[in-house]
Amino acid sequence: MSTLEESLRAISERVKSHSSTMATEEAVKTAVVLPFLRSLGYDVFDPSEVVPEFTADAVGKKGEKVDYAIKIDGEIRILIECKPISVTLEKKHLDQLYRYFSVTNAKFAILTNGRTFNFYTDLDAPNKLDTRPFFIFDIADFNTGILSELKKFEKAAFDVNAILATAERLKYTSGVKQVISKLVEEPTEDFVRLVSASVYEGRMTAQVREMFTGVVRAAFREVIMDTVKSRLSSALADTEEVIEKIDVPVEEEPDVVTTEEEREGYMIVKAIVRDTIAPKRVVMRDQKSYCGILIDNNNRKPLARLWFNRSVKYIGLFDGENEERVIVDSLDQIYDFTDRLRATAKKYAD
Image (tube, rainbow, N blue to C red; front, side, top):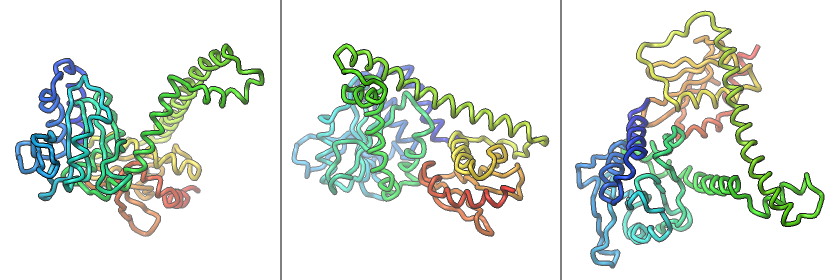
């Protein structure tokens, strides 16, 4: 488990256990925001790096301040505004961040109530803060899927261009997910009519519509559950086949800890090549410096290497004579190398 993951899990547990004591902004700052910034590698005790109660004369409102400004290489890059944990974050809470964003060199802004973190930038218009966040996460519902995005905000790896490269996709993906989640719980009339049209030919009366609303809601949930169960069953079956096939114990170095990110990367690679080579032949062998993905658990048949134990992450590809390491900003980017991974797997398919 990485240091960042450990720190975030600790903050997550604190929020779940002690949220009732975080009724003020100061409590949120002390218990959540400062530990969060520290987990990203910022020196919260250095006021020239993490600037509390930041004010800028150009804003034009005397005494107005932003809770924190993060400086990287001497330039303000991130603005942070905190609210009590009981507050539901809304557009009106962006006012101060909006004004400060346009008069500083900040490229990102974070609005948080200690539980929900909303990340903003200027995708819609240069130097003008978007009203919709491009990245949202609930730290009380922590999962490893957010790590790849948060790692881009680490002090040691902070790269504006790398973050912006995926920010637009994240923004629209997040919006679509919210729409889908809402449809699951409260299907709209138009959606109910759309999905029921192919299975019901009668007149859509108010009574029929009410009936189908419940049917659609239940069916939507069942589809999601069936998909999850199918993927889990497939993964377990593949794992059992690999265990049966391997007679010799896997030779791993001592004290090796396989992270969730490495496991997810392995499963993505395995899914990519499953039409090229039998999934049971794709085996993960973790090492201290990298996580190896081999064919037939054979070192002479490397498929890929995940160099994830560092701030800048790489995937090692073997479609040439030697390994080529390519930077990856997120697990999704592994799909960009689908053709190359399948070409390597094809070499070992026979």
